[in-house]
Image 1 (cartoon, rainbow, N blue to C red):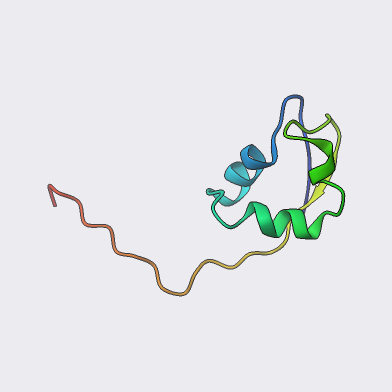
Image 2: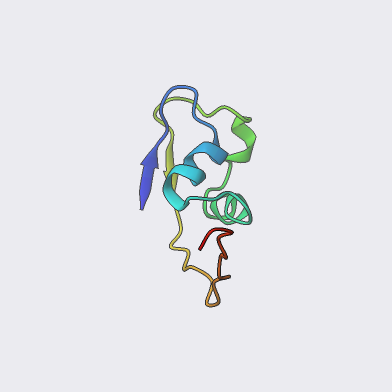
Length: 68
């Protein structure tokens, strides 16, 4: 999948919008996009970013709600 950066976008913001998290995702995106790290923290508007297919972890932690 490809995403085009909007004005003021950062890689962390794009990863959070697409994947819902940034932990361990930004490294995979940087590996799939050579020279993306050289652009700095704020990406230029119109920058095309290739997003790798990242499968969710096999074991999901069960969330226990206090009032359930």
